[in-house]
Image 1 (cartoon, rainbow, N blue to C red):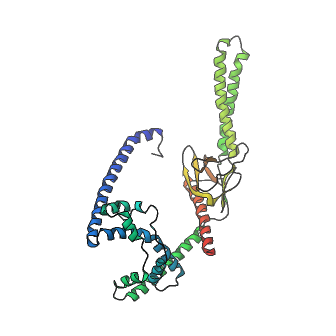
Image 2: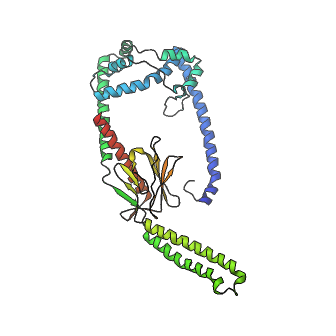
Image 3: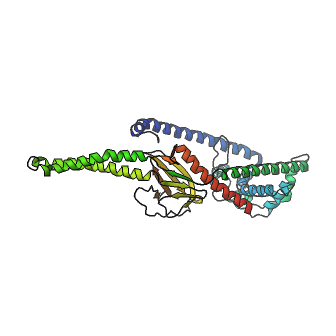
Length: 376
């Protein structure tokens, strides 16, 4: 739909709307029965331990999840403990636990089904929120928790050591792979690239074609003065026709001269740290860029999404024909329209330009992460 022209888009719209309606109703039905099934599963599980325990366990996962992840990551990165379980439990025992914000709206992850929210599941278990919350945020008893874990295995100490070694080795391998990836991304761009529009010949052609028609329009407008008696009845019509032809021709001449002047000038320069637009008072730091995209609509539109906290760039006056970007204050975007994209007067495809710009953004981000890791 987005890539189609006006007529094609209108012809496709009925089938598109029908498809959207069908998928919405299908998703609604699937989600309804999926949630009903999950609530029945909760009720069946609660028969084993009681509704209060099931409700407490449901919230306990939300309470402990982020803390568990942080402690495990910290211990794996330091690789200073041979028993991660005891060290993580000891860390949890020192924390004052609270239910995270929006926890009742959280939906437990599942590979195929859409779980109901925690709030819906608590309501179905008919357990008051305060009772479940009081139990879910109780302090962690590290010694009791460790003893419970040991009861699940015949040789708990061997399992603990093996599990700790496996997790630490996995964390070290992942960190090494991530560092190598970041280093590859950071080294993926070197120096600067200048994008320009090109197409001087087209600008020349437009101006050359328009100039004779502009002269023709002026000549037609001069007829009433050259032969006032013979053309006095059609003077206004003649003047109007000449003005219309001349105006259209002058527009072509103006566009041709503008295109000719724009062709060799840099519209966007990519550097390792900045996107430099011709009409910006200061280069745009890459750290202020959230995303870059391209749209093919009467040429090529380069859209640069700014981060929410990034200030809007200041514009400066430029000479006639200098390609300049626009700023969409409402959407926090920078927009640059070009007829085509060239580097060193060699035309490149839009997807190549998008890849280049994305590489510069990713390389800058990779350098920042590597620098933070080295200083941290």
